[in-house]
Amino acid sequence: MTAADKAVTAAVLVIGNEILSGRTKDVNLGFLAEQLTALGIRLREARVIADLEADIVATVNETRARYDYVFTTGGIGPTHDDITAACVAKAFGVALVLDERAVAVLTRHYQPGQLNEARLRMAHVPAGASLIDNPVSAAPGFQMGNVFVMAGVPSIMQAMFGGLKQRLVGGPAILSRTVSGFIAEGTIAAGLGALQDRYGQLEIGSYPFFRQGRFGASFVLRGTDAAAIAAAAEELRTLIRELGAEPMEAEPL
Amino acid sequence: MTAADKAVTAAVLVIGNEILSGRTKDVNLGFLAEQLTALGIRLREARVIADLEADIVATVNETRARYDYVFTTGGIGPTHDDITAACVAKAFGVALVLDERAVAVLTRHYQPGQLNEARLRMAHVPAGASLIDNPVSAAPGFQMGNVFVMAGVPSIMQAMFGGLKQRLVGGPAILSRTVSGFIAEGTIAAGLGALQDRYGQLEIGSYPFFRQGRFGASFVLRGTDAAAIAAAAEELRTLIRELGAEPMEAEPL
Image (cartoon, rainbow over all chains, first blue to last red; front, top):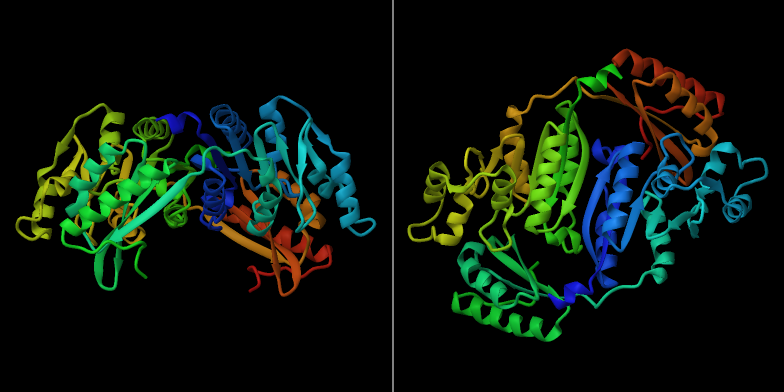
């Protein structure tokens, strides 16, 4: 597992009661999972937690100690239920302070007289944090240590991530190749398990599908060793043919 | 917080590398969040974790101790990467055993000679577990203590949940009322925070939207005290009018 030794890791924290009640369906996790993988960063876990100080503080501290990067979404607006910034400050043991750069951004954004106390909440960050630009609605996110705090609204979060990703240093590129076939998982399972045993440096996943009225499965070979992926894919194609099906490069539509 | 004292709580564990890599977008969390809320069960957190034994065992043990119910999705198929059942057995400190009822179900489902060793993996459950029916593709889920183990394929998971939910005992019904308005969060934030302070038994959330070319927000009042929700909703409608907007019963389309 030499590649894993150098792996750069991350966790995503989705913060918000509305996700846990089912009112809002989260789409930020899927976006961040794709983006991080493309950057060579391995998303090791994601958590959805409530707008509760104790939960947020404990989860931020647990994950920032365990992973190279932590990305949070949600809870940085102007209302009473937006407590993420205060919780991150508490997690780091620093004060929540008014950031003059953030005040300047909000002052430019709002009409005169509109920058009230509630909106100034959005200019408070943990002492020592750097800002993350918000090209959509001005109020910035922030980076504190290895924790990146972003908005929960997907369009804003995506814009924030687009701006911050140059700060991230990924590990070796995570390569992936899919081989599919109209073959039942239970038919190929023994051969697939043996393939995984022979290619311990790869992560081989099996995902069933039902398409064109037939059952099949896609097999995903993932890792950082391009030669091993190519060799394993060739063995997998041979295995699928031996079991009477035709290997495909992707899941059929 | 008398209502919270009696609250019945749950966690959801989404198990699978494919969610963390971004290959597959999870939809099980949103479904379970809605269903549990409707049953009077409060989903306190959700975690997405990889197909790694140490992670699954630790997470199952942490959450089953903390919450009344734990629901897992994913990792119960016939291939080498399906390790959820073995991990749950390990978490409970019991053996993974061949379940004769599950064997009978699979024997009826497959053609003679098709029930190979890989497919028999799906008939193994932790010793002492009860089965969860799978009306879609036969291979059952299982309940072990307060942990409910289901498939990751959404249609199968939903069918399994439909069959198991009669086993769940919810707490007081979780009531919810939404009041919306074309009003900026920053404009109403002070009044909304004061309303939350007056109604400590309710959870008041604020969710901005952009519709019909205008910004607005929906305010969700949630709790178990119907009279408090009605009273708070009336105060909220008055507040919105005082700030120059018209309260609406729901978010505009």
